[in-house]
Amino acid sequence: MKARVLLVHNYYGSLVPSGENQVVESEGELLRQHDHEVNEFFRYSDDIVNKGARGTITGALSTPWNPFSARAIKKVVDISKPNVVHVHNTFPLISPAIFHSIGSRSAQVLTLHNYRLFCPAAIPMRDGQVCTECINRRSVRPALRYGCYRNSRLATFPLALSVALHRGLGTWANNVDAFIALTDFQRDLMVDAGLPAALVHVKPNFFPGEPQVLPWKDRRSSVVFAGRLSAEKGVESLVRVWIEWGSTAPQLRIVGDGELKDKLMRLASASPSVPIYFLGQLTSVEAQQEIAQSRLLVLPSEWFEGFPLVVREAFAFGTPVAASNIGSLPSIVHQGENGVIFSPGNPQSLLEVVRTAWNTDGALQRLSTGARNSFEALYTEEVNYRLLMEIYQQAIEVGRRRKSA
Image 1 (cartoon, helix red, strand yellow):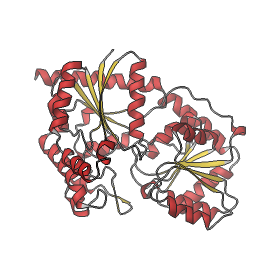
Image 2 (cartoon, rainbow, N blue to C red):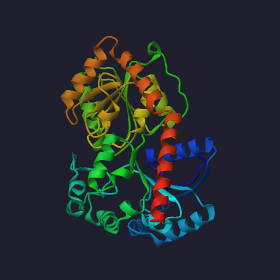
Image 3 (cartoon, one colour):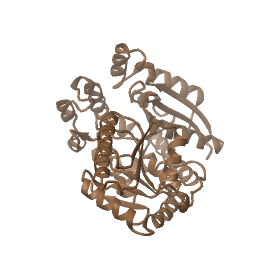
Image 4 (cartoon, rainbow, N blue to C red):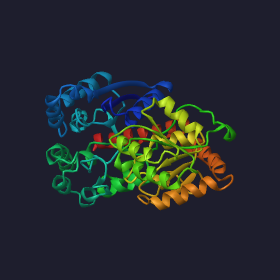
């Protein structure tokens, strides 16, 4: 099937590197490589950031229903006549209003990069703990009560309004022909929240190309963390664990930036004999080189991840992963096969599991082989393209049935 595809995405601010932005670009390139006609309907959060308070107000008003985007995309669809409109992110400038304006003109596909359809904060976490109240109760009242988005009831309101509005309008049940969840865990949670089970498909992220695996003997004796330095990522627990491990620990190389950076650097500087290195925000290529050269990637997340791009990168380079036993992670990282699993938010478990794996002769090298095998079986371009085409075809068929009903 050679589809005409319209990609729809609201790019996140350029000051905050986004895995979603990378996925959109990678999938667009994948489609073009297979000779599909690809058009784009993109908006950029930088446009409102640069306008200060006026931009913030514009974003808030646009979040639940943006009639201007709805009209604009209708014109684009009428001109380009795509078989599939593939939406990634509508927050804050595009809004779910587009699903109503497109109607039956094209099959509509929505990738679920997070939980924003039912969780106003997008991240099911509150006060450092996993929170699924809005999802479980099918209500936005908890989010409004706690001010879950940016710890502000005012900032939370437009997002909560959007969730409630589109649940009430039946947007997800009646206007989207296929949803793409990144893992089985995410699929099950979103179906429990109200999405039609028959329309939710699982397609993980992929890594483009055929990266070479660095021989084990040539790798640095290091463990790498790559991600945002924020509470939900569990990176503070990681640094404290390394300090407890002491001077005999391998190098811990931390790639990324975020609100905890200064605090973490102060913690590390108080124990100068412990080998912890803060590399800052690197380019994608530089971060991938760090992962490829390390002997373990550690992912101590304390919230429900979607599908972290660093995991598919680690597997592509044959780097095993140590991950928290929470959310989708244990469905991606398999104990003793391509990595190891420890209890989330439990520094002692993290220390014991990682230290044991590190000190057991040959353990990480065997897991390295398993990591690369996982990549070749599940996360290559070819596998992902086949899954994407199957989802597009099913979406087109659902759209046809709805149109003829």
